[in-house]
Image 1 (cartoon, rainbow, N blue to C red):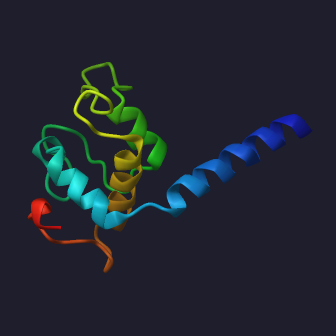
Image 2: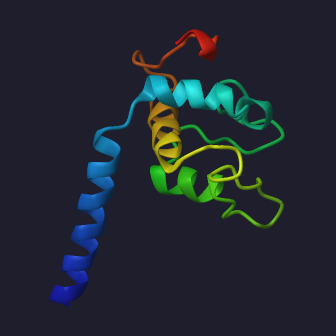
Length: 111
C-alpha cells in the first residue's frame, strides 16, 4: 500500500513539475500553428472534433501522440515537429479559455 501511495505521489509530483513551466501564450501559438482549431474550433468548444476546453496535460499529450485510435486524431508529436512541450503548453492554453488570462491574439507568427 505504501508503495502504491509513493508511486501515485511521484506521478503527481512529476506532472506538477512538468505543468509548472507551462506557457499558455506558447500554447495558443502551438494551437494555431498546428491548426488545432480546424477540428476543435477556435475556442476549443468542438466542431468536427470534440470539445477540448480545460483538457488535462495527459489527455492532450495522449491525443497528440495519436492515443485516440477509434476515429480520433492522428499523431502530431514527432510527425509534424510538435513536441511534448507543445502539448503541455496547449493544455495550459486550454485551461485559460474563458478566463481573464486567456491569450487572445490570432497571428501566431507575430508572437
